[in-house]
Image 1 (cartoon, rainbow over the protein chains, first blue to last red):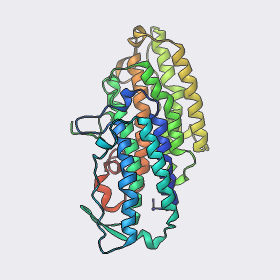
Image 2 (image 1 turned 180 degrees about the vertical axis):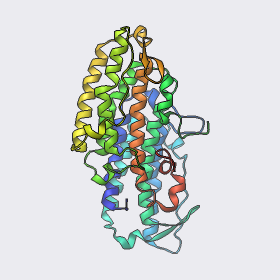
Image 3 (image 1 turned 60 degrees about the vertical axis):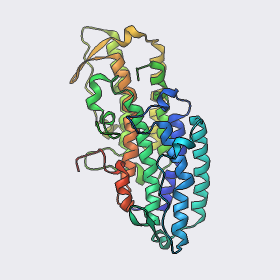
Image 4 (image 1 turned 180 degrees about the horizontal axis):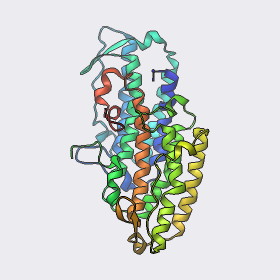
Length: 179
Length: 179
């Protein structure tokens, strides 16, 4: 499937409502369990997405669009949510995510990007040269990856409870830390 | 996490709205692509969930609860949706799923199950003896597995478009058919 801005925005626009439908009002026990040491809970995943709205996607797109001499994208802090989400409820995080995402999509649409801008490049701290098009496609895939991760982390809480059905449910053993 | 009926229903109740938020109104291109030969599209996943509401979870629970001499659970047709979903739109499938699920949760709540019923057994055609508690936990994990699968299948459509970011996105290479 070829990248298309309208297709991408169609997904980006839906992620906050998807996570709200999945998580808001759930018993805490579903929200605050992980899939092993140093892995994200559902709560951590949403906090991570909030951080991305503030620090990653749009700021990085701005650096690429500016095409200054220094096009280095700031490194991404994968654990920023540990302190940024402290003391918040899942509902607060979902609200923050929805508000930030809505604003970022207004910004993105306002740029009226064309093929010329999609091909512009920045310098990723580890991956080297990347295009705006790749950044925007990654934003979409990253959203979907975290939706999948949240569902998987939740499913795993019933790994023992499903008994012999475990072998039919690859989601219970996939991903997360080794073992 | 120990199985708890209220916790389980909290998830089961949210799946139709989650899938509606994720999928309804999306461009068709996101809905009808798979992750390789003989794998499910997003559309197939929802059709599979619809079939489960009709043919699997509640009918199997009834067999276990009845405790007749013959407690064999009917085999599950993993490809029933191929004909059952033919000619329908994703919106129709999402509506069907929501209506069937709502009815099934009324049935489930109406049974007022206790620890005694959770321990009752049926005979799975391949897995052998299974309890009602395991069946209900599997219903929850199965839902979440398909939410994860849909998000993954969608993410994979941008596998090439993300360029060098692919190595940071395990969702793009995980699951589905070999390779």
